[in-house]
Image (cartoon, rainbow, N blue to C red; front, side, top):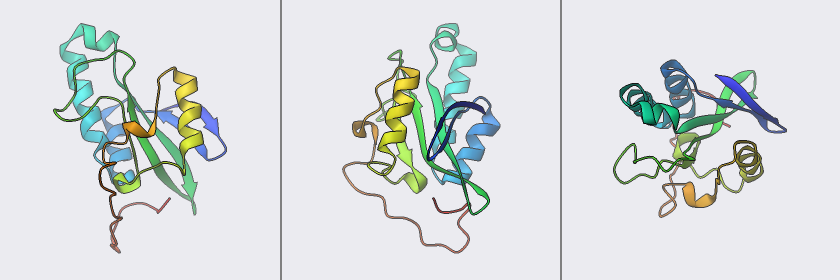
Length: 144
């Protein structure tokens, strides 16, 4: 992962490898790694896609000495064909697919400004219903 921007809430990192995607997915308890893996496959199969990729980012924090990813997102500045039917390529989600707005709105706006892509609450794919957090003792990763 590559640091893109430091904020008061943590640092924005850009996912670069399949391992990055799965680490963020496991720690953030979301499916972002699946979307990232699909993007990597599309890049490998299509030179045009490789030159205009969907970029993936995560807000990394240290919580009680452990890594947490309270916000994960995909940003498409090129209007690529959708990675998955029913989903837009620019999407933003929080820990356990919860809505990261408004809690991390300032951090998301700062990243949007840094990378030159509009990132708004409309990019949260589950806004028609709120995702309830899982209450499990064995849940992976710290709670942001």
